[in-house]
Amino acid sequence: MTAKQLNITKEKEQLEKQVELFFIDLVLLTKDIPPFLNERVERINLIRSKTYEKTNQLQHRNLLIRIVEHFISQQVDVNLWTWHPEQSSDEKYADITGFKDEKIILNIEATTSSKAIGKPRLQMKKTLASLNSKQGKKYYFVQTIEMYNSALRTVKTENYDITVEKI
Image 1 (cartoon, rainbow, N blue to C red):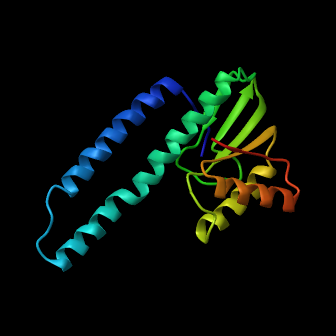
Image 2 (cartoon, rainbow, N blue to C red):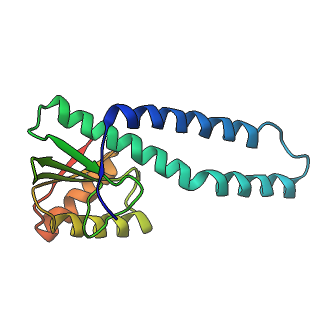
């Protein structure tokens, strides 16, 4: 996997189109209610299979764009952003990496999970461990107070050099 340069304007436009298509698909999947219980449950399964991963990816992309916009508004000294919006806690690449010339300034991971229970908690711990080994200033962004508290506990317990932020 190689780094993908982030063009925030282009990615926002693409995300907007992808979200619109997602809703069109969702409307088509829910335009009628099947008459019988088993058919209704089958429809629920179909909706889940067609939307689950896409829902996660769209939310994650949107969150990453918001994070980069946040750093840009803070006038952080970065002249190249790369991102990996479809991957999760890669050893080599963070969700977002900010460079000043060829030097890594920032490495950022983010989660759209709302609670650190079960699989999301294990993923968070794996992501934090991976992030801690990366160069530059390290950030882990979350969206809920539950995830913030859980990530902060892990960072403190493991003595990681990571800033946890809720956005």
